[in-house]
Image 1: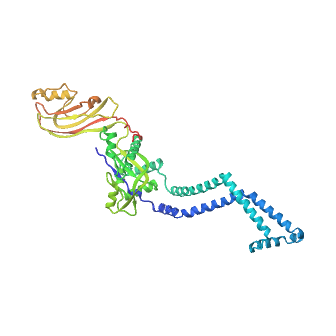
Image 2 (image 1 turned 60 degrees about the vertical axis):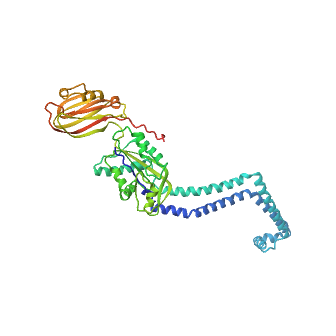
Image 3 (image 1 turned 135 degrees about the horizontal axis):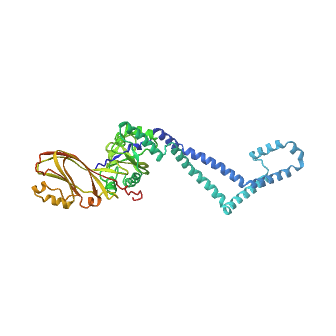
Length: 455
């Protein structure tokens, strides 16, 4: 069984254009805050103006009453030179030549305003809370605005992105003669489990792969599983394919491998090591200490949270499958035999499976299939007894130079004791012979019982 493991770490490099946008936003975050605070200050002034609108009217009324009383004896002059008087009045305010009585009224007005503010703070704290809440909300909006601007520049990694990515991959597979990768739902669940395992120890690439594989697939004979961990955030599917072809050829070849015909995936957010600055390393294989590996090449890394795309590739998803029991290439002398123990605990609900025998020999041989007890009896026979022996046997195929046959096996017997396939050259006129061929089992496995919440 071949379990190939590969990983992709080069994808933590940031796109230059995107990085420039992000840096620009961060550099200008204080300007953004300043603009927000100016807006808040304006809103605060409007609020205060509304709160003390009646106070202004009272003060204005007091001043008007006072000025009218003052100029009552010279009403015509006031009326005739109203604008001149107003100009002169404000000029006198600046020069400090304001009448003493006006100062008293101004002091009274200030006392009234301060008193009202104190009363509002004591008996109406909701105004103050509203102001503070407005300040807090506006400040929070700064971070939200920056984050939204950053996210709006990045392609979203979702199911649509993944399907587009594999459509492009399948176009390249077709050009190499490989079958297309087809989507397999239960591989999604396994990819989720692998993500949860790997983030427990991000220092080791593909951490826990063998343990998870043995837990869920130990009964699945000849099942191939290959794993790729990618970090495609910030790329379109087409851009990412081009980047993999130039920067991660091992990973790209893994996606084109014709041994795999199915895929599943999981998108997660978790810790991983990102490269700081330049680094000659563009990809990492499995079971490697990631920070030590980078350091050995003079690279600096830091642990950060990033978007993971975990891809699981397999040679089977559902339906009948074929497992190889043995490939035979043997020289067989006269009066000798070869035997092949066959025992499997297959993950299937079927009561019977098929044993397919395809054998050729250069001279006639005899074919048997025994249960353990029957095989023990066959071994006890003398040579002359074996010459004429045809049973008891679970299956007797006769004497021939070619065998192309299917034998039905009971799955319970196959798992408990098994069978023995015997090719015998114990014959009266036996000759030296060469035997070659393939022995396989065809059965329909059950779908792996993988639940993503198992981990």
